[in-house]
Image 1: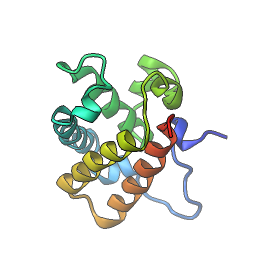
Image 2: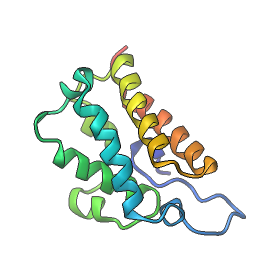
Image 3: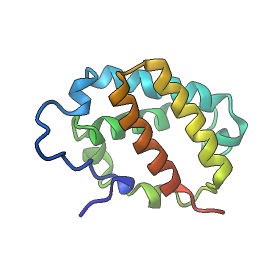
Image 4: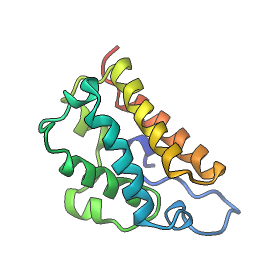
Length: 141
């Protein structure tokens, strides 16, 4: 069984046919807008910016997050094709992520969700996933 926090895709809901969330939001452009807005916040946040090895160039991190989210929600497998299994917790372990960092990350992701303004049901699914994932990445009290 693959855990969502560790990069697996969400389990399909039995009896709920239809497009993936990726399809429902219009594909890659939605995730590009979401992540672009998120990183606008990160770039101005000294608490989060210090976690990035190259704080003056967030392009790589921006691309990786975009590809990961697109894949997670039903898009192309480009992230895994390029980087292997997401292993999110292992990839984030070298960085000190405590409650403050988790909360700052969520502030910017919530703002990004609000900015891209998906339908309420999709916003709720995104929010629930990001809250769970942000907590799963925490490695300090």
